[in-house]
Every structure is written in structure tokens, then in C-alpha cells.
Amino acid sequence: SSTISSTIDGPGPDSCSSLGAASAQEVEDMLAVQREISKTRGEIEQTKGRMQYLEQTSATSLIRVQLNQAEIDVSFTASKKRVEEGEKVEFEGRVHGGFPPYSYEWDFGDGETSTSAYPVHSYKSVGSYTVSLKVTDDRDNTDTKTRDDYIAVRPGWSAGNIARSAWNGLVTFGHVLANIFIWVGILSPIWIVVGGGVFYWWRRRKRRA
Image (spheres, rainbow, N blue to C red):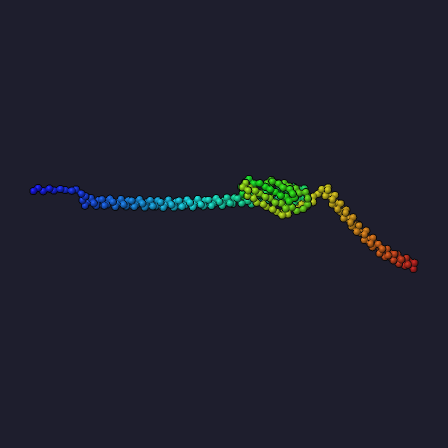
């Protein structure tokens, strides 16, 4: 009888060990890659969060700046607060905040107005005047400043004023004289009686002497 022997080639023990080591290394490499990906993803999310925070902070700061700019603070000054009739007064408007250009509306308290930033005005009558200034910016934001009895006007020197003062003095003097004459007229009978009595007493005394 003949013996038939067959040999089937297959992986030996050494081959299995090598294959197992290679598979473990691949798994380790894959895990390392996943860890790097997760780390990178976390850094990306962190960076994204920081960017969103900065965007929100910048937007809030911008809103605050815009709100501060939108607020208008108006004030004004005058070159003189006590003047004579007809004397010129220089006014100056001051604006803080808002958005230029600005428009000005002055009210000088005597019926006169102006739209200049630096108006010059003169008052024609004696008295105290309230002055106000309204300012409007380019975006229709407004503010108004009012000063009560800000300008005091006294009589100035002029021929008319001198004549008026002289006439008033003459009228006053005439009133005084009229009062004197009235009282003299009222008291004249008494003075006549007293004077007659004194004269009679003086005549009798002279005769006795």
C-alpha cells in the first residue's frame, strides 16, 4: 500500500503572535488619533466660545458707546448778565454728546429768537429776561437749557432818558408844592386867627409902654 501524505500550509505560532501585535498597535494608533481629534475638537469649541464672548462684549460696548453719544448735554453762557438798554450781549451755546451737525434755537425772553451758535442780542426795555436754548442733533436727539431771570437790563444813558428823568423830577416837585399849597389853604384860617391874636397882644403891650 502506498502512503499518501499531504501538507497544508497555514500560519504557525509565530505568525499568529505577529498578527496580534500588529492589530494591537493599530488599535492603539486609532485611539491616539481619536484622542487628538477630541482634543482638537475641544480646543475648537473653546476658541469658538471665546469668539462668541468677544463678539457679544464688543457689541455691548458698541451699544454703550452709541447710547453715550446719543445723550446731549446743552449749556450756554453770556458775555454780560447785567446790561443797559441797547447794550449788546454775546451768547455762546455749548453741546456735549449727540451727533453733529447741531441746530440751535434761542429764545431771549423778549420775543426775539436766533438760530446761531454764537448770537449777539441787545435788549430794548428795562427788566429781567429768561433765556433758553434748544439743540437738536443730526439724529433728532434734543435737549433744552433754560435760565430764569438770566439777563437784567437797567436804564441806559440817553437824551430821552435824561429828559424823562428831569420831567419825572419836575412832576414830583410840582406834587410837593401842590401839597404845600393845599395844606396852607387848609390851615390859613387858623394862621389868621393866631396872627391876629399875636398882633392884638403886641399893640396893647406897646400902648401900655
